Amino acid sequence: MHLQRLKEELERDIARIAEFKPVVHHITNYVAMNDSANITIAIGASPIMSFAHGEIDELVSIASSLLINIGTLDEYIIQAVMLAVKSAKSKGVPVLLDPVGSGATKLRTSTALSVAEEGVDVIKGNQGEILSLLRKEGVVRGVDSKVTAEAADVKEVARKFGLVVVATGKEDLISDGRSVYVMRNGTEMLGRITASGCMLGSVIASFMAVQKDFLLASLEGLACYNVAGELAAEKSSGTASFRSNLIDEISKITAEKVIERLNLERVV
Image (cartoon, rainbow, N blue to C red; front, side):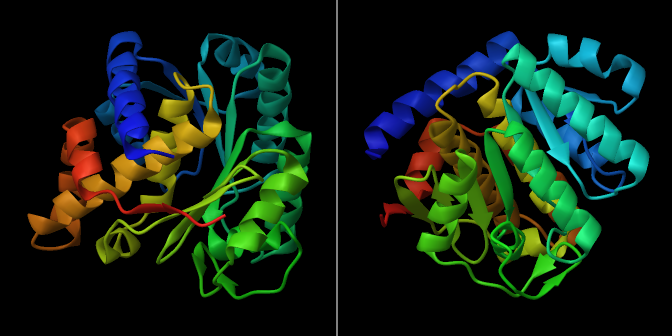
């Protein structure tokens, strides 16, 4: 993707999020809920954090996108997730799945696969979580991963489920099943705070609310988040200040800031 086109689309979509304040319905984990809500507000969207079965269909009806994060699972949450995804599919609401910990336990892996097969538009996870969706063996410790995915693996997952995949790691891989991009931005500080991946999902879901090319929406969200992370790290004295500065930088992000630092390459 040409950087000039990405800059133009990003300028437009940041402005559209600010103008329309789209509702992003989150069914996410307890650990990340506050940070995910705050980062969604910072980018300009409007978060709803609810998983009550009795109101899911109504909330999906007013949402512009749905984020599913399986970080804290139980049977009630699993049922809520499936209800929400089915409702979103029937209403044309785009869905992002964050398969937290998939590959670490059978419950997480089977839940992630069930949701993916039900029909979502973007899957965002670390590279071990993404590989688990191909039933490949790896080392996934909770939400952390020592697995490195190849471009071909990410492309295969995208093709298998017919969606966009964002596989985060030292280098982030993004694929729609045809092309594969590698993004070399971000900071190691993102790996030192809880919920950094969950917040990334919220930012991407916010762009999905206004940009229906989900490969582009994923690139936009990932680029904004990684560059904001770099800017935050430069002014932070530790992990607590970094978390606050990250939200600050997302609230001030512009296409110019992103393109100035962006290291994006199409590899397939």
